Length: 235
Image (tube, rainbow, N blue to C red; front, side):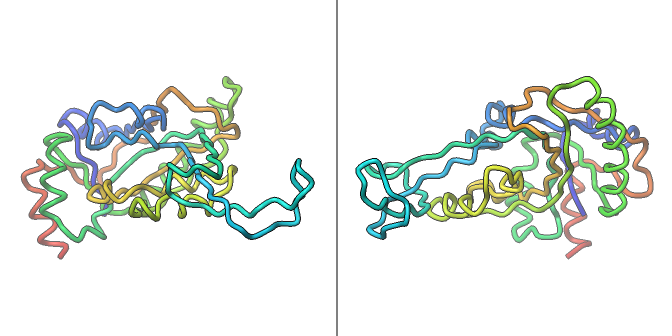
């Protein structure tokens, strides 16, 4: 199941109207809640270190250039840093299927609101979300220069600081899936992300709002103080 915590009026709106806000990556860089703010959100920042291994590429000095390897270290005197920014909007849930420490999660969840939306049928939820997004795409693409191109969903993977940069290096500049990679300090969120991608990589500064109708039958709403009971039943 997927969980979203928020103020009661927002959670009720999500349940009864199927209304959701896809926030911009830029917005998550600047969000007021320090526990959720990620200044690296949406930025593929790769640092490379020089090796002694020669390549087949001849440099300006007429000699073979040295091979670069990805590293998470940011204070190297030699090497290069490449910053790539992607254009996307994201909708975030907590994936309750893989929470190893419910107490840690519950303590943090209270920072976000007093009610919870519980998505019980994830497949049906995603199917309906995709259907509504097709309608949004048609209208959005007709009126905007930057076109919506895809919708992707996945669990976020978390990596220690010394592995984070190396993991990001596996993604090229055209692959939006790197937004499913985050630093280990955010791991208590255990995120499941639904991501709207665009044809161009410029940051989307505006949120995308969709409404897909009542979620009755595939979701429930409960006060946050009842969430512990949900974990007890599912474990």
